Amino acid sequence: MKRFSKRHSILALALGSLVLTSAVGCDSMESDASKADRKVQKSVMESAEKRRTPTTQGLSSAIADLNMAVNQSGASLSGKIEAKSMLAAAEFEAGDRTLRDLNALDPAISRAFWDIRQIAAQIQKANDAAKALAATNPDATLKLIADKKTEMAAASAAAAKKASDLQGEIDKVKGQVAALTQQKDAAMAEAESAADKASKASDKEAGAILDAATESRRKGGNIGHDIDKQSAALLPLERDMAVEQANKATADQAIAALDENEKVVKANWATVMTQMDEQKALAAKMGQELAAKGKALEDLYKRAAELRAEAVKHFNDSADKNASAATDANSLSLQLGKWVNDFPKAPEKVAWDRLRTLYHLNVFKLLQGEAQTTLGTLYSNQAAQQDARAKLVASISKTLQEAGIALPAALSAPDDVKAVDAAGKAYGNAAELFVAVYEGGGTPKDVQQAARLFRVFSSYGQYLNGDKAKLGDAKNAYKAYQEALPDSKDDPMARWIPAEIRG
Image (cartoon, rainbow, N blue to C red):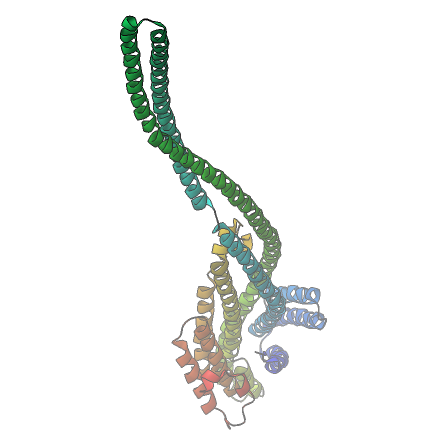
């Protein structure tokens, strides 16, 4: 909101009249005060000249001159008021200039927030891709393959053992058949030899020999029957052994197939792991970009903190100097009132009455409240920025943690001040001052109306700062402001009033 520069100009002119009046209306003891006031005037004029140069250096030099004026010993109340009010105005101007520089950083900070959020979103995509790839982890498949291989190896070993056992039984039977075959062959050879011998022997001898040959043939035949029995037992044994050999071959083939499957699975997983590494590398690269943005944000925060501290000092100094000017204005009003009572017919009476109005203490309280309101807005903006930062941190912390990326220092650093509380306090102080101004006796009407309008904004600032009950105060203050207008329909300030206040 614009300051009341016109009123400041009127006050400056009035101060010159007061100095003049003081020199005429007081005794010789006032001459020292007049001299001090002329030094004050000189510093004020020099500061005004320097303030015409729109530079920070010129304004700083003007503030230095005005501080000299404020600290001028022996100055009259009028001189003190002039120096303090002008210094308060210069401090406010310096604070306003610094505040503009501070506000100029807001787009860059918001942009840094946006950039960081976008980079975090890309990191989240890399995280999601890595998770999707990790979900194809073949450990379960490889375990199934390993378990099946173990099962097939056991089956192969069991079949091999059974086949070996059967081979042993077959070899035993074959050995028995071979032994019986030898016995049969021997018996048949013996029978053939006896028959041949009988054919050559006498009839008397041949009979006995033929009987022996017949017995050998009988014995050979019996052994042949035993051989047939043993040979018949070989068939199921050989069949069972063939089955076990087939079982072993099947198990061995399954193991070979499982080995090949295992190689394929592992090769595919190696490819997936490479892709996962690529996603992690991408996330790490974006983490470096995030760190760079975080460093830029840290520099912006550092500069903002410097400007904020500087602005706060200027606005506090402006409020303090206006408060001190208000105290002096009250003393001056009492002094002028005494002069009016003591010299009711003095030609300076009109000037004294006019000065009592122009130098009403509530004029300076209004300006003090304005500085406090501006402080409230400054802190409220800081709180809003901190709230945006907190929401950003909440939205990206998990993403960065999953990617193993550190949160930038600018986002992890604690808040340097309790901005919400500071804003509430400044707005509250301003509201109290504005109420005192428009309820104060003898306050000029335009100052009262300005105080009502300022009260609207200070209450609304408290509402935006989190105190929802203050919206009603803002509405009531606006209503009182409108009621005091000559014509509420022709109000140039109406367009600056938020719609929710206007209803």
